[in-house]
Image (tube, rainbow, N blue to C red; front, side):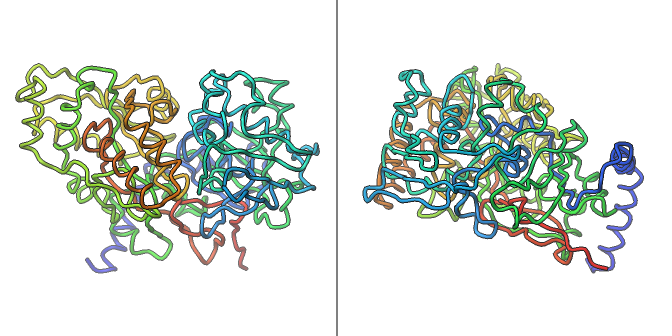
Length: 547
């Protein structure tokens, strides 16, 4: 197809977008005009409406992006490399055995409301995330601390026994169970951010409603209007405010790819950086444009099974369903952006690790396994549901299309019937957490460049497991790998664990390795860098205003 034909096709589809979705643009414009707000310096499509802005309980990317602007941890991520660099801590020392970290806070740290930030604020924030009453799915990120897992499990009641202590107002001492090569990466993750103790203790679960909301990061929360926008305003009291590039940033909860592109083409948004917001019907055109950027990053699209429900409590059933999926068909027919089929969970390219091969497409073996489980030809197999999320503004089409393909493949190959259930983002996350589903669309983007970030979440007590699957051998392998300083032995332990996860027990089915996709004009936007974690700190991004 020549470029001129692509251009004509894009033009006709863009006119369709304007006709069918232009009202959204008008509504967004009018909503801002009615409130007499100043225009934003930067407007970004952020995907689904965030579930929360509490760093301790968020689980999705839309939440994470906003929270990264509002709060900060001891370290933060370099916008180019996604490696940890000094944040609230200006420096640190690590003991020779790698078990003790001494963090030195900056002496000029204050909340956006003017109160000082001190080391006991950090201790409070970490203990709060570990407190089982908080309900943090990511509490496991802190289990590397001495006694942290036992405190989270209620075996230890005294928080003073957890390995984080304020030595003085500007020094934090952290004791680990074993050397953890990626601990500084964890310190840049939202679960470990510093949150305002006084506000939380005064207002409880409604603390995020307080205005002004104290923030420790580069931005303050100017407004959060459901199904409209999150508006962030530069925090002049942030320790690095001189390098915060934009005064006002609007994050829009738009989930429709066509609507997102329409807003972008009309100049109402500056950046679209969500992989689910690319119109599949325009992909062959968009990928040739200079403002369309694709890159490899650590992300996997997979299926979860609820193993607490029959017949998914039988590994033979799960393996049969896995081996009946033609993943090449998914990337060829649906995603079309250079994604690769996945037979294992940990993406290729993770440091010091190569995954074992998982279950391959094998329809005959799939039918045999299902027969062995007592369902020859799918007879007497109960009708089951598959949940997938819709974002604000409409369904993320990619999830619906994948669901339809899975439905057809499982019907044609195994003779089983699946009902599709599309859920709003918050309802979807709640259903997963409560194990209120049979099978579920899932994805995971690495929090740091290590296999632990993918494999650790399927240990028995991890809040992000969400399958009901518990395996003592798997837990022991992950624990031993975490304590192993030898890189080769560590990788071998992780490989054995991953083989259990994706091949022998199969509580999940890896489908696709993501390709990162975003679009923005490099002549107008600076500070967005493609990296393995698909991490783009807001304070680094600015729009160039040309005459």
